[in-house]
Length: 161
Image (cartoon, rainbow, N blue to C red; front, side, top):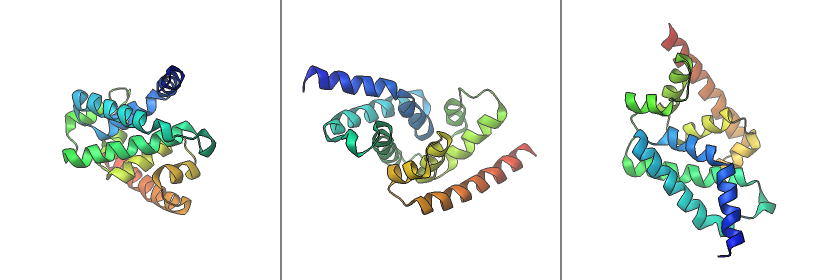
């Protein structure tokens, strides 16, 4: 590996560090688990970096795909499908109001693929980008997001009543 190649990777990773942090916040429990997941994502990104071809798509799309796959695998290994109240609070630590806390709690309770869909949607990714990252059709993205938005609306309305 050349120093330029390593520096390029570090620069791209640093400029997109928020992606790794958000995914770890949604898929991991507690601060130690989040740090471990962030490190695991960074390691897998580095291992795959030689195969990244900027002509085939944006770095952020490629990064989301790998990071989400690592996070979902991590989640399956840890068998952490049930969120804990402390974990929800930690994942929403940057939120400033109760609605944001409730939103993060609802999202964390979703199945892994649904979490990824909502996370990418909240990141203002296009349906095309979401479909590319998750390997599903744009029509499937639209259908699933409609159902998830309705589910969130129902849960948040019920939570605030």
